[in-house]
Amino acid sequence: MQNGKNLKRKEKKIPHHNLDRVLFFLLLFSSSINLLHLPSHAEFDCVGASVQKFNFKFNASNAYETIKKQVNYGARYPGSLGIEKTRKLIANELQSSINWDINFQNFTKKWNEEDVKLVNIICQPPNFDVSTPNFLLMAHYDTRLWATSDPDPERRRDSVPGANDGASGVGILLELGKVLVEYGITNFRLIFFDAEDQGGILGWDWLVGSRYYVSSKDSELQDISWAILLDMVGAINATFKRERNSDMYAKVLLDQIWDEAANLNYSNYFINESWKTILDDHVPFLQAGIPAIDIIDDFSSRYNPWHTTYDNLTYIDVDTLEAVGYTLESALQKLVQSTDWMNGLTRFNYVSKFTITVVLGSIIMISLIVRSSGKDARKIGKSNKINNS
Ligand code: 1BN
Ligand code: ZN
Image (cartoon, rainbow, N blue to C red):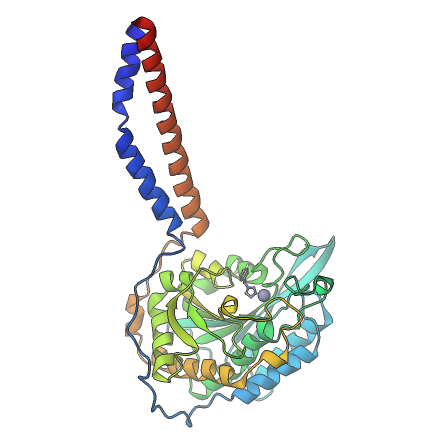
């Protein structure tokens, strides 16, 4: 009898209906992390229909030629002959007319028992200006060793030509870097990362180069105010949506670029629509608290040759290169002219989707355990009552 009373008292302390409600809302909240609709932005369609585009310096044909050269080197996975040629191409492009300062950041990583040479390429324009807030323009230059998504299973061990996934970012950045210097903009670096694209192959992870850069260049990072990553920026009919990490942690920067694209009537490329999170080379920067955005094609929205043997020049479109080049040429001039917009850029603590999921998952698990132990207590209470009566 005594026992039954105690258990009955305990049972009262657990508000089951409230707990159910809490659990329901937690489940709703956790499942909506991916579906959250971030604040929508002004409609810009047609704003720039009459914008004149003849006075831009960015030459999309030059970018195309640099992409073509890279593709003609063949596969450019870490340790390949093609990637070594790409390094030389990057250095030559930046040093043939004016002398950029190029720092090859060498490191190694074991792949299939062998040490592979990896190199991040950090490029400073002549008269690099540290005194004003500086920024990074970034792309990866490696290509994926295996075409793991090829429609033909027989070809999934062939390498990816990487015209879009690799070469396009490099092609645009080399041209854009030169253009910015022509405008007298010198408070930025170009960084070309090695080993972004080998995730899941022979035990490798994604973002090896950018992670290494962020972990090793502490003092350099202190002076960096913001960063823009370009990845897969050359495909025909590309659609760049608001990647979720970029939108959450560097919204004002993302707004500036998407607004400028709209002014130039490029809203068909820069779609003003929230998208999912993408694990890409901007993430290590976000983890270090540096606002960074990823301009990346929503390759899932249509047929595309991502990580297949079809990622070749036939899908590269000069119009897309021009849309990205013009947008950045125009936006970056404005961004460096006045730094007022940067007041909206805040350093933050990056919380990954993984962390949110683990924390919410743990709360849900604990609540379920508490709830079921409450039910057990009620059952025992009932059976004790029956036995005693
Ligand atoms: C971008 C281009 N990425 C790889 N090639 C990053 C990525 C990794 C995107 C995993 C989606 C999933
Ligand atoms: Zn890739």
